[in-house]
Image (cartoon, rainbow, N blue to C red):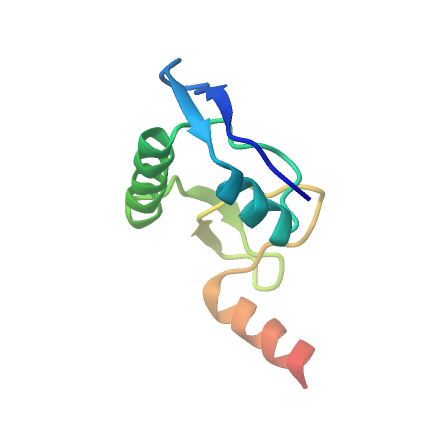
Length: 99
């Protein structure tokens, strides 16, 4: 399959960038169906921001442990009526699930 270079517009900065034939072949080989939406510079910035965000502080939510009833904090917002455990109870539940 022959590819031709395409000029795309970055969704972040609005600048034009070239989606080369080689990149298109790479995307196809990896099973990626969508064209990139950001230029290489904006993609790099976004990766850097996500990496910095993952090491930063997370928003904690106060909950009551479903096993022991003690108050605890978790780094997510509980959803779908699933039980939420404190650290020690979570380890016990996880050990039982593995065994």
